[in-house]
Length: 194
Image (cartoon, rainbow, N blue to C red; front, side):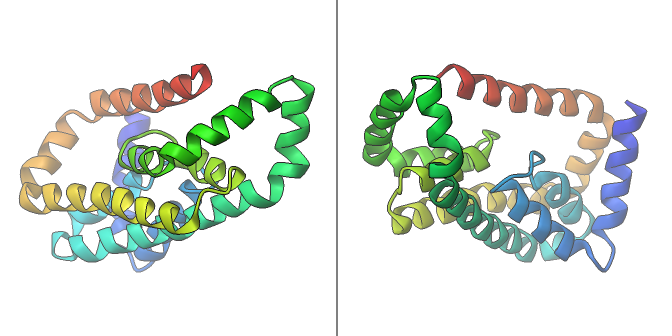
């Protein structure tokens, strides 16, 4: 758990630095399209370090996440034919994907919204949305509402309960890290077996 403590302390230190907002932008953008680490690793320490900037930080995370989501969407649109479709054909899953595509068009907004609020790997949803050509306006609205909702709720909680939350996080960092890891792995597991 010393390793996790070092990462946490480093994130707190970085969150107070000049490049914190750019680092948050980069992490939130990348997480929505290809990076496995969620922006919370930057968002939480930044808000704890500077609660007066909570809304600005949440706004930036939302904006970067939605823009990164467009990049993930583009990956789904432009790389599906060259990468995913041949693999689906090879494994005999192309017909199942077409069924999934019909389902996705019917419930896509809810899928994007649900994944955007949870620890579910958002990049999977952004790429899938592009692959099935989900309506871009539906994708955008669901992304803004979900990512904004998630980041602003975190910002509000940390702004309102900042000092006690910081103490709670620092006292329970090990268990919280394990819980987060379980949720992340569980999300990948659910995706694999759906």
